[in-house]
Image (cartoon, rainbow, N blue to C red; front, side):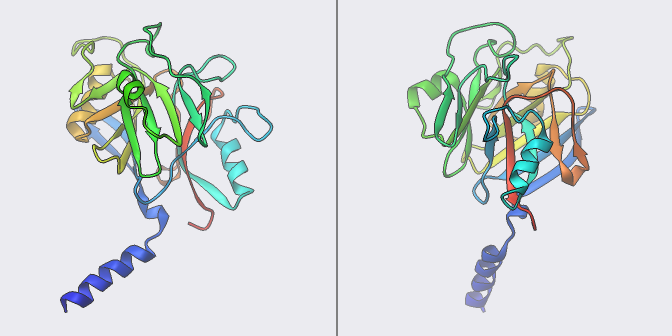
Length: 248
């Protein structure tokens, strides 16, 4: 009987759909509503998108979805993933399909990106990891894709040291956190304005994630069909998304 049960579990795993690796939901924490999309990165493959085959920025989720449709795929989830210049070039490190299109930035600079420590979302063949920038520079992980942004929200289970509990700077914000093993990548967008302290606390205290990275607060966009949502607006730079077969 035990052998039969083990075989049943094995067969269930073999027949699981890649779509099962994505869960989107809405939840409330500390009186603030959040949209959350969690990806099992051990079972599926996130990708970064910047330019179309002609070299022009995709800019919108619809353009990415259209390009994927030509390959028999669909965009199951997506989010803007890092800050960029006016021409949509990434501000920091950007790697796509193993090719480095923009270098790592380690110096203190202006704006939220320069609020050190900042960090990198690194997609490997085995999962996804948010890594503080100087640690990334030292360890040089093998990323098939990566995007740099900032500031870090959570670093080894602690909030960014410059976040203030009573800050009055509040925006709709989005970001990503990863598990220690790299098998979970959790993408979050606040449904209302929040401070950095509030946003980081959600990743640490509500989601229990040891590392989390801020993406943006002015250009925050989410494509989440399970929530009936695909945001439009200003053209974006880097986008992270989950391509799945069109019949999933």
